[in-house]
Length: 198
Length: 198
Image (cartoon, rainbow over all chains, first blue to last red):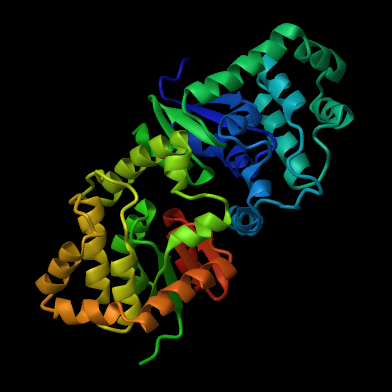
C-alpha cells in the first residue's frame, strides 16, 4: 500500500548531524504514519557552490569545536554510541552509490544505519571498499555484485545528478528534509518536518 | 535571593534567531527555576574573525533564503508576529549599549523584547536613535539620559570588550547560551541548555 505522507531524507554519509537523523528517522516516521524516501547525496558540490572546498567544520575552527561537543551531548541525549572519527570527513561516495542503486530494497535502512555507525560509533573508514563490503556481507547480501553494480557509469551518473538536484532544491547542508515541497535543514528540524505533514 | 541556576543569553539585536529566543527565554527560564543573564554583544567581530564582513545569510544566498522561510515557520509555531525587515541586518549597537549600561535594571527584559519586536515584527529601524528613544519613553524611562549614559566611552568599551569575550568563549553565532560552562548555539538549543541545569 502506497503511503501518501512521505518525507525525503537527504543525507551525506560523511555528515555528523546526518548520523543523528539516520538513527532516529525510521521509528519517528513510522509513529507519524509517514514513509521515508532515503536520498543520499554528496555535500561536496553544494559546499563548493558556496565557495567551500572542505567541511565548514574544518574551515571554521570555532564551528568545528562546537559541533564535536554538541554531537557528543546529542548522542548522550538520544542514547546513541559516539566515537569521534579519526578522520573527518570520510568518503561516503561508495555507500551513497549503493543506496542510489538500490533505493527500494528492503535492506537499505539497515545498511544506512550500519554505515553511519561504522563512521561515527566505531571510527571505521567507510571510504574503504572492504569495510563497505563487510557491512553488506553481514546483512547477508552479495557484496561484490552490489558494489560492481553500484559502480556502473549509469549509477555514478545518478548520484551525480542527485547531488546537482540537491543544489537546485536549495539544499546547502545535511541532513535536510523535504515534505510537501517544504525544506527543513538540520537534525533539529526532523520533528518539525514530520509535524508539517499532520 | 540569589538564584544559583543561571543561563547566560548571548544575543545580537540584528540576529533573526535571537528574536525567537528573546521572546521565549524569560518564561521558559522562570518555569525551570533559572535566572537569565542578558548578554548583548556584537556579532560583527565574531563574523570578521571567521572571514565574513556581512551576515552569512547575505554572503550565502541559499542559507539566507532558507533562513527567512524557516523564521516565518518558527514564528507561526511560537505564535510570534513576524514581518520581514526591509533591511538586514540592522544596527543593534545603541540598543546593545543601553542593555550593557543597565544590566541589572528591572526594565531590561521588556526593553530587549520591544527592540526585537520593532526590528522583526514591525520593520522599524532599530539603528535609528529616535526609534530607540521612543521605545524607552513608552516604558516610562528617561530616554535622553539613558542614551547619553550608554554612549559614555566607558560603556562603549564595555560592549567592545564583551564582544571580544564572546570570541574567546568560542561563540560564532547568536543566540548562544552558556550554562555551567557549556556552550549551546541556536534558538533550537534553548530547551537543551535549560535542561542541562536539571
